[in-house]
Length: 96
Image (cartoon, rainbow, N blue to C red; front, top):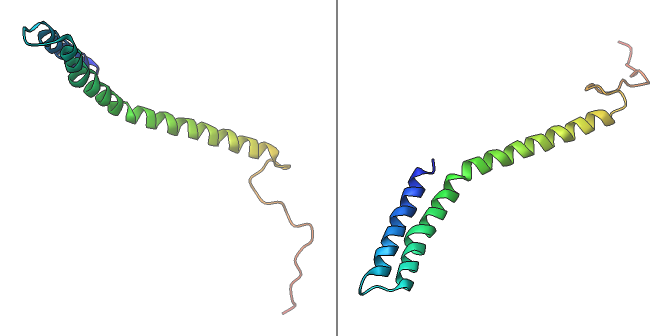
């Protein structure tokens, strides 16, 4: 998964070295080349590639919190069942 970013960083590093050692180049130019052609784009791409994993982790954490909350609510019920409590007084109907 990380082979492309590693290759990109390597190529950007070689470009920066060539810029810094060129007779018309400067070390500052080499550093800027490495940062703007190497670190910046690779950081952005790796961050975007990790978005689905972060989203799954958030959903997993929310599901665990929801399950824990439901367990607490079930434990708090007096009859611990899912049915409504029976009415203590029977309803009165009219005679036909």
